Amino acid sequence: MALRISVIGTGYLGATHAACLAEFGFEVLGLDIDPDKIATLTAGRIPMYEPGLSELLLKHVAGHEGSSGRLRFTTSPQEAAEFGDVHFICVNTPQRKGEFAADMSYVDAAVDSIAPYLTRPALVVGKSTVPVGSASRLAERLAALAPVGEGAELAWNPEFLREGFAVGDTLHPDRIVVGTRSERAEELLREVYATPIAEGVPFVVTDFATAELVKAAANSFLATKISFINAMAEVCESAGADVTQLSKALSYDERIGGKFLNAGLGFGGGCLPKDIRAFMARAGELGADQALTFLREVDSINMRRRSRMVELAREQCGGGFLGRQVAVLGAAFKPNSDDIRDSPALNVAAQIQLQGAQVTVYDPKAMDNARKMFPSLAYADSPMEAAYGAHVVLHLTEWQEFRELDPAELGTVVAERRLLDGRNVLDGAAWRAAGWTYRAMGRPS
Ligand code: NAD
Image 1 (cartoon, rainbow, N blue to C red):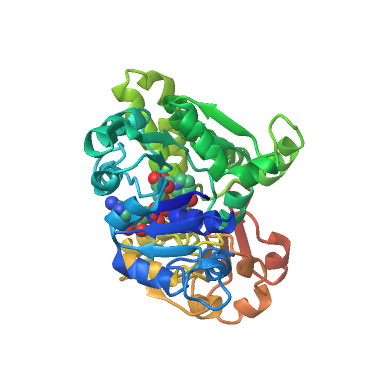
Image 2 (cartoon, rainbow, N blue to C red):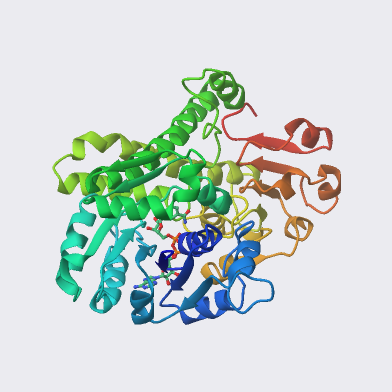
């Protein structure tokens, strides 16, 4: 009989994972502690913006015309525990308040919530990003709490999806990494991922610690690449060089490659910043902190980008923000997402507001989330409305919509035609031709 799978935590990762497992042909039950989220998903809607996910959800959620009916949702841990042969843990692991370390309380609570109902052999698979050593700890916790004892086994299967491409990344990942302790666990995971494996996706089997570390290492590498090019942008600004030409020239070197090599406002979101910090904290606990001191610099370079943008905006406003209006284009931490966790755009908007400017934000998809988190900022329904009366326009999230703006048209509503491109993707020549002062990060003014 085909495996039945439960997915615990139905946020950005879990909702996508659940829908994609249904697409692979499994019966899937998603569990969350948030009843509103479960009601929304059951109604066939997604509580976030993620391209392609709504369609996939409607294709499979039970109770909708024409759906496969293979996907259901619940708030009952008992139901999920009794339903699944395999249980994926996809709950959040945020940064602890005032510390670098990861808050593991949600993962622990998720394991604790299903374990007492595991009365037959089951595989619990962690997908959340966790400090190395967590899987070993959780394996003991699980075996101690589950009535079936050792029959409740643990495995670790870190997730590498990118928001904005989550469905494609889950259906066709670059690789699948699993940390296992038994042949049975490996076999079950090979069965779960039979479709991508048949397509030739590499399936890497490791021990627990290595699997956990692959995720931390991948994020550290990506963050380092972004901060590397942003450090070059700082030098370019001092030397009067152009970082976009520099990165293009670097990208032709196949050993370097062009991805994650765009200088700008830096990284944010619910993963990279907190993951490199948690990695540093964990390395410290293990006595290996020296190995990761470079990540502290990676983090500092990244945060300096935000201060630099505030500084450039202040300059454009004539040296101070009092009585000035600033338009901010972008609120999501990156395009094609409504996720505003640790968003560089909103961080800059909030800093500028604190310094006395009147700030109006527009984002194609992240307005509701931004309003909830930053209620004191002003919000507009379009780039034109945000820019009305502005002394400077800041381009902070590289949505396609902003690349398509007509500089001449936007120029009719602003107080001053001044644009700061925090993402280095707008056509500077076109903006200048329309009478704008176009300034970007890491490029000559
Ligand atoms: P999220 O906050 O969007 O979703 C987490 C969900 O888990 C929420 O809906 C929450 O209500 C639910 N939850 C919390 N405790 C629970 C419990 N005890 N039982 C059931 N549900 C519970 O977070 P996310 O972005 O989906 O990230 C989840 C994990 O995946 C994190 O560890 C993150 O680092 C990792 N990850 C995320 C991404 C990404 O792009 N979002 C990519 C790779 C890895």
